[in-house]
Length: 207
Figure 1 (tube, rainbow, N blue to C red):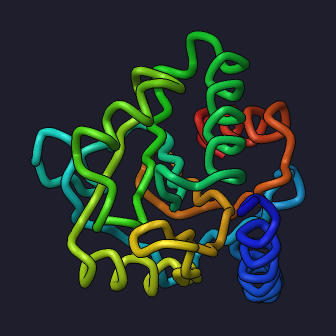
Figure 2 (cartoon, rainbow, N blue to C red; figure 1 turned 180 degrees about the vertical axis):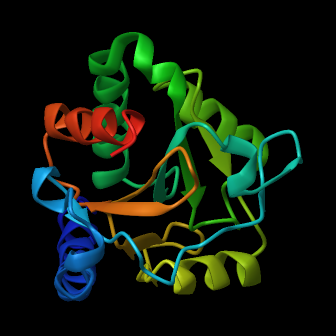
């Protein structure tokens, strides 16, 4: 029965991030004339989460420039996550379905916070189960920690009943970049798929 505790910790971690991002959004409002039209928190102009260098399932190093011309959605999680991760990934599948032909201009990236257990092969199987276009990314523990820090992502292991059976409490929001590679939005984990799709359409339209 490990379902509830990670969700509670994820909510607290996400609440702290949301409070920080809301404050940042207010400071950056003058730079974001379109912010009132987004459902998510507009973080345009922030000086964090600028890039990353992690490997995909084939071992190829990926960075933001690889996806220029596409809106990029980043979600941090782990394969054995019992609740928020599969729920969010399924929601992103619904977002892609809602976008129709525009979905080909969106790249979803699942960044594992559990490199000890999430092998490249396992990541590839996991993300493709939701949508064949999704990519799983991983790094060693140091790279994972550095990227999480840069993105203001909280994560912490919670011991299970046996060694190796731990869970990970973590921030559960989405980070969305526009096709020009600029971080634009932070999306709460409880946001509706239709609203996420609406925000992505605006970014794809150049707003």
